[in-house]
Image (tube, rainbow, N blue to C red; front, top):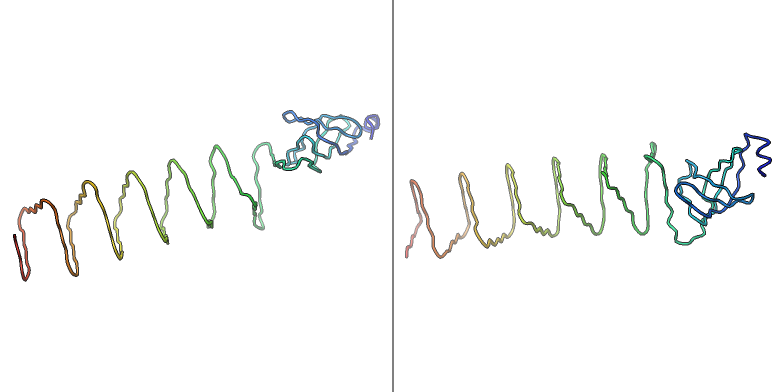
Length: 217
């Protein structure tokens, strides 16, 4: 449709396909069959056009042109970008929403990334979490691990009760091992052995040693 025909009918909107020859900011230069126009990406066109793309353009009688859709991309390996000005929300009120990719999925934001769900499930062969600071708040935690290794500069714990059941327990302390308790009770089925270069046992009131045989020296 010629420019003269559009002037005859000021409400006429024509559609043509063309090739993007240049992009500068939000303005696109598109070469149509009827000429070259400066167009902007339509609000409903989420795919960001690139140079060389074949696009569908709507031209108003006033001369304003909008890229409605990207019809074809000739550049092999070019990245497809979905772009929205302002906030973007994807909803599936009556179904599920899935994102699948063969090479990987990345989520990046300089601000907050928030997940809210009734149930969260993560399945992976390998996992890695790197955080400068982490805070976890929960009511109940259950873990089943084949092997656990923890390296830390310091560990501080404040709990009401600690209960452990192990088959074998080994601990090596290079410097001092100090325990402060209101009462201590050690019970062994067979033997308790304590050895040191120097041993000091003191009591404010009573020291009692009881056994069938007691050897000193």
